[in-house]
Image (cartoon, rainbow, N blue to C red; front, side, top):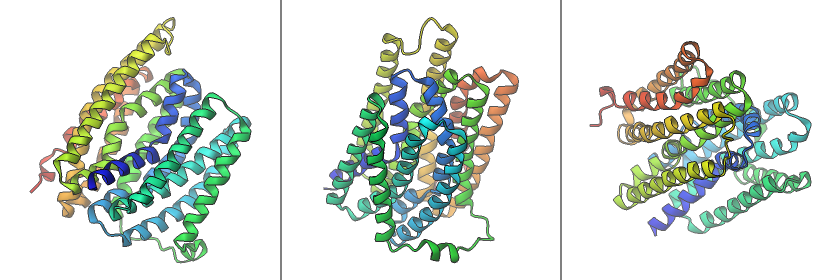
Length: 381
C-alpha cells in the first residue's frame, strides 16, 4: 500500500511541479528556441517569487509530518501569491506582445494553482489518501494533454476554458480553507529576526533569476533559448530530488523506495541520451549554423556531467535537513554563500571568457555544490 502511495504521489508531484520544464521541452522539440527565450524571460520573475517564497515547505512538512504546518504554509502562499500576481500582471502588460498575453496569463494562473496544489498533494501523501491522490493525478494529466494539443494546434479560444477552470479551483481552495485575505493582510507582521530559511530559498532562486536575465540580455535569442532548454532538462534530477522526492525517500527509510528512485533517475538519463540522438538525427539544431550547433553540444555535454555531480551535493543537503535538524540554520546560511558563489562564477566567466562560455556555468555550480555540502561542519552524527 505504501509503495503504491509513494509511486502515485511521486507522479503527482512530478506533473504538478515540472509542467514548465515540460512546456520548454515541447517548444524545444519543435526547434522554437526564440519562443523559449522570450517565454522564459517573461515568466522568470514569477518563478523567482514562487520558488523563493516556498521556503522549503514541502521538505519540512514531509520531515516533521505536522499537518498543522499545512494551514500555516498555505496561508503564507495565499498572501505571497496574491501580491505576486498583482505585481506580475503589470510586468507582462508592459513587456509581453499582445498576442502572447492570454497564453502568459494561463501559465501564470497555472503556476499559482500548482504552487497551492503542491501542499495539498503533500498532505494527501502524509495521510496516505489514495483516492484524492488519484483524482488529483487525473486532473493534472488532463492539463498536460491540453498543453500538448495547444502547442501543436494553437487557438486563442481554447485558452479561456483552462483559465476559468483554474480560477474557480483556486477560489475553491481559498474558501475551503476558510482563508480571509483581508484578515491576513490586516494581521500581517514583519519579523525583526532574520529568517534564514526564507533567505536560503530567496538567494538560490535569485541566482536562477540573474542567470536567466543575463542569458536573455547578453546572448542572441537562439543561444539563450538553448541554454534555458538544456539547463531546465539537466537540472531536473537535482531539482526533483531537492524539492520533491528527496525528503520523502529519507523519511520512508526503505531500500525499495530508494531503489525505485534510482531506477527512475537511470531511465531519465537514458531518456536524455535518446533526446540528444533524436535532436542530432532530426537536425533540430541546424548543422549549417556551426557556431549554434557547437554551442548546443557543448552546453549539453557540460550540463549532463553537471547533472550527475549535482545529485550527490543535493542528496547530502537533504540528509542534513532530515537527520541534523539542529544544523538546519547553518545549512540555510550556507545556501546563501553558495548562491553568492554562483553569481560570482557568472561574472567571472563573462569577464574572462565572454557570454558564449555560459554553457559551463551549470557544471561549475555542480562542482561547488558537491564541495560545499560536504564540508566538515555538516558531518552527520
